[in-house]
Amino acid sequence: MKEIIGNLIKGKTVMILGFGREGISTYDVIRKYFPEKPIIIADRNPAIQIVQEIRTTDKFAAFSLEKDYLNSIRDVEIIFKSPGVNLNKREINPNTHIHTQTQLFLSKYSHQTIGITGTKGKSTTASLLQHILIQSKLDSVLLGNIGIAPFSMIESIKKDTKIVFELSAHQLEDVSVSPHIGILLNIFEEHLDHFDDYSKYISAKNKIFDFQHKNDVRIVNLNQTDKVKNFEKELKSRFIGFSSENDTKANCFLDNGFINLRYKKGGKTQLIKSSEIKTLIGKHNLSNIMAAILCCKELGLLDDQIIAGINSFKSLEHRLEYVGYYKSIHFYNDSIATIPEATIEAIKTLPDINTIILGGYDRGLDFQKLIEFISDSDVENILLLGIAGKRMLELFYQINPVNKKINFVADLKTAMKIVVKFTKPNKTCLLSPAAASYDQFNDFEERGRCYKKIARNL
Image (cartoon, rainbow, N blue to C red; front, top):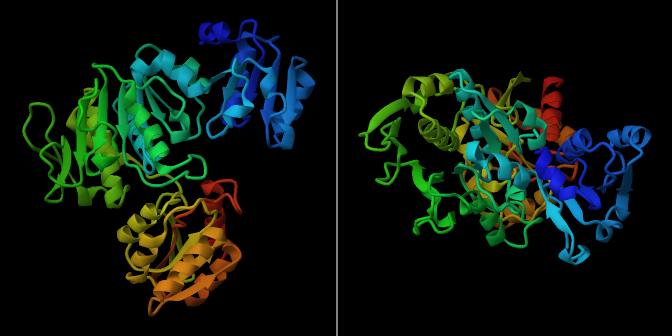
């Protein structure tokens, strides 16, 4: 990586655009190899704690912060851009080259990388896969959108290390390299505030396959082939697929209550009974498990190793997480559910949901199907938050469902007071917002932890 970065920045003016996890790790790598290279650090957020430390220790660093953070952008020749930073191309000097960690990392390590993307299930699938690899004594690292910047793991990577890389659409939109094994779990409407339209979001997700070679592998959800670009056309890479039904094209599928394998030239094999998987509940998680299974088979793992890894895996925080039993109510935290489809799956999965908390930051998603589903469900108490909640409230008014108590509330603390008042004893309260958290929280993790803290202190 030293040589790659050195060739990029030699004799060039450099900016790090976005100073979160990736921006900081880019800075650390450049400083490790090029301690006296002048760098401009640009970020909209002026309250980054590490900035004060760098100001006092690094005389070769300059800063462009707050509303004027893009003022110097036309004066630089190299930009290292963080995921999610949306630049108007008119702001960029035509002679400026933009690079991302994902692109640079894949340019060096794509041959040993397993890339995992999808609107939902990325973190669960990546973590499950990493867990199985560790349990099977394979050298592996987990990085990417799960919260670990690629550059921060470089020193842990050897020539035989398997790299499990969770990839968001923001990370994929700028790449021209694809991972050796690519997994596309699903695609639903999301991030429409960043992408101009849904088709561009779909195209970004499909980049996980677009640049693969004939020795590479793509793992596809056969229940969503309409979302996979050029699915019917043979891409360069080899295709394997998974399905929630016994599809003849599927290499891993659900049938008669079992996850089954039909892998390479082998016949149908019942691998594991779906009802015996206790830590990853719900049909959507069975799809995540099947994707991980196919990847493990590609890596040469035995069925017994895969089954042992699945059975010993513990689900992640904020993903249908059982919080506890308080005030005679079972509380579940599904704050990761930031799209309507995820909330619908959560309602299908959990029994006895009497109260649900919805809403938050509005990104213009279509809530109609969700509102119709909840209106026809057994859920009785509906608490709505944020601008997204106001839009949901209007849709509920249009349908006017019977036997529902619907309340718009200012915040989670207020919502939880109503939860205690109206939720029936021994029933479930579910936080599954179907919306982003950015109106009142920094991210879905902060929202989930706030919910759990309030519940535990009722």
